[in-house]
Image 1 (cartoon, one colour):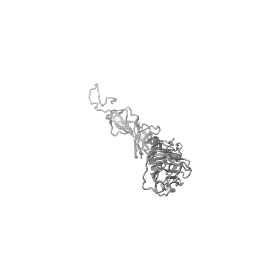
Image 2 (cartoon, rainbow, N blue to C red):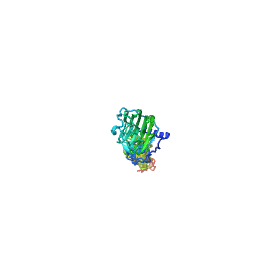
Image 3 (cartoon, one colour):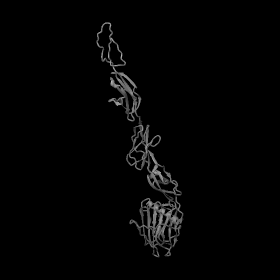
Image 4 (tube, helix red, strand yellow):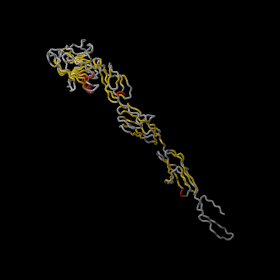
Length: 501
């Protein structure tokens, strides 16, 4: 309903531009109300020219509070309680049919309905700067705001200090009291319309005068839709207009102020000069208390970490950031109302990851989530102590190789001549009793939780073979005075010494 009336109000303004009117419409334009707000922005005092009254979600008095308004689109209205009016003389005639739940008044000549109020479907309605929620409906085509009687048959030239005052004159003239008057309310607060339908008979000439008055809640606009009136043709004078509470100020339709006039399917409207509507959208903030996992984790240098945002909200975007530098560690990911997993970019140093969240429709409505992820970078394996470059041992003696390394989750694999040695998986590899077959080139591969593995420098093992007599000196017989030679084969050609006995 508010959208329908807003459209109608625009039509009225266009009618003023296109066809002219009895006034120059001046809006109470907002001077400090933006089109969008975040829900955490502070409340502030509204300003709109001479407007004294403000209406809308989140409005208390003249203070607008985005948080109180809540997320969504709201219409904020500024007006001066209809202190002054203009008359729009062109528009669309629209006498609506009663809904079937209307109230029909049976009024005698020169009487009124008595006081009607909220219980009768009326509402707060501003009229010449005062708010009323009571009215009277008179048999002579009058409506009185407040409690004053509206029974006068003799219409007046407005303004006039003589009672009745505070009136809406739709077809004010002397009527028979045999006509039909109905009233009802349509729509929902704060955009209801109180409708009074007059189907009257003029005293004397006994001709019909039919008009419908519509009072619009919140906008305080008054419309008069005249289906038929032939006062001029029948030599009578009638009044169509509005007048304030002491009869000092009035607005009337030109040519219809205690004058003879005719109308068929005619539209007139009394529009408060100070009135402005503005649509405001309040965007929600992301929930900063969403749980973020893991609270702490380890990672290898150059690797990514998966961050889980539990219950990431639909309509919001999430990004990982470095908590110290605010630099992004991921792109933006849309929440869908379920757990959201975001992989970080490659990390090379200990990092605290925070989650930045913003409204998908308004980037300025953002927050940093409270929970963060502490990432500890684990080192790749590094050898700090190499095996000895070479060693020589005697056959049967032990030989030992050792390496020292840093890193997490270290494992070792010793190799001989490039081939893994079965079971040689400690930082030290020992051969308890060497044989000549053990000679060769040894290395060790150190691996860890984080890659890459690292290979040691080479260590050459030389085995010195133990001497043994393969063939001994042979027995021989010689004559006295002859020389004798004894020979032995020790099987080793180097490093061997001999002592004959």
